[in-house]
Image (cartoon, rainbow, N blue to C red):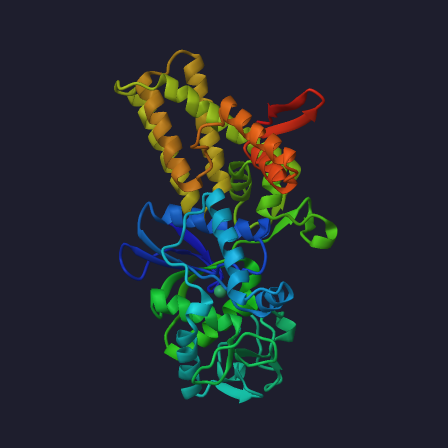
Length: 462
Ligand SMILES: [Zn+2]
């Protein structure tokens, strides 16, 4: 039985879905104003693993939104002379392609905020009818004083707060908590929609309430997002949804912790800010990055370091070698009953670790203990073809959840030479963007190029 830490109750709870056999899961997707960074991907990779693990026992219906309208997308698109749609489409595509690279499986529904304006307007009207809102200068605000349990997710008491103070920005901290904006009145040089509640655009928080309830119902099982979304985003989602429907919004709130880089908070000014693309261009394999992101329990801060990447790479190499050896050895005969019992035990311990609030680091420890013990048995000449076969089954079961073992074969020498020729061709016509793209792509596949007088040499980095 899976136990999950629920931010709402503040304790670990046994997970039971509302409808037997089905889990309804909503995760806050990206705001597509730029490439997603590695901290964002910690959350997305974790959610993918959670979904894969739940799928062992349930059918999972997963919805992840795309926020394609907010202050930053509007500002950036205007600055670049693009329409909001052109601009956000570019970063949506980039995000979905990055997810594919990291083997994050697509959600069942990926709703865009701009395609759900009528649903948001309807939700604001419902709140309005029940007296939770007020208007000011063309905008509509949610009055937090009208919602008695506002603050229950972030465990903050807002009772003594001055009422009637407002905030228009989508992001702010607890100390600056105010009535938040549901609908932003039309402004000069901003995208807007003409609607029954007036011309304007939605606030960020109402987007997720409207889209999650449309696809998953007024009460659903799990809602996730990075820990930085607890306040104000998720607190506001709860307030809006529960005040509108009069029902509980979500049963379990699951929040992975922050990622830091080499012990420091990631920031552009410190030069330790990485997108997935930056890391691939440095030659790190997507599987290595995914492994490192999953190797630490999700409720602990993850220190993303060069050493960590190195260790992740050698751990994965060890697993890949093991798989290769077991494949070679594998046979159809019946496994030894003693070994069969050991595999069963390893599977059970793996499940126990994962059921313990998704303790991935303990689960990995169990997998590597198993690998070590199986190697030992093999060295003693005690491992049969049938044993190798069931050892592989366990590793495959593990990888169905973790998704870290390389499935494609490595690039063949002749493919590498073709790529090098294409790069030389690009350089001859002075298309340096293309030649650089090829160089970086090869690096992401573990092939490093070196240009010498005699021509381009290459070597494998892993
Ligand atoms: Zn959200």
